Image (tube, rainbow, N blue to C red):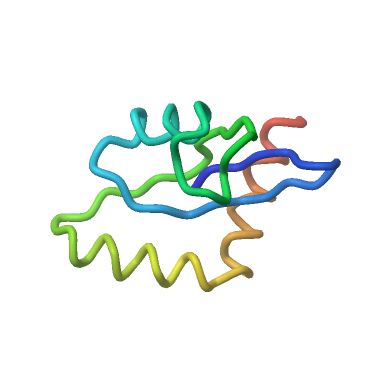
Length: 82
C-alpha cells in the first residue's frame, strides 16, 4: 500500500508487484497506474505471499476494505507525526 498527500488529504493505493521498490519508483515517475500519476508516493505497508494467486486475492481484499486501509494509514501517520 502506498500513500500520497493530495490537496491536504492522504490518499492510499493498493497494488501487487514482484519488485516493490521498482513499482513505487514507477508510480513516482508517472509510469504506474493512471490513478497514481503526478503524485509522490510512499510505501507504507507490504506483505509477502507464497504464490501470485494468493497475493492477488489478498490485494483485492485490501483494495475493497477501506476500514483496514484507513487503519494502516492512521498507524503510519501516527508513527510519523509522533
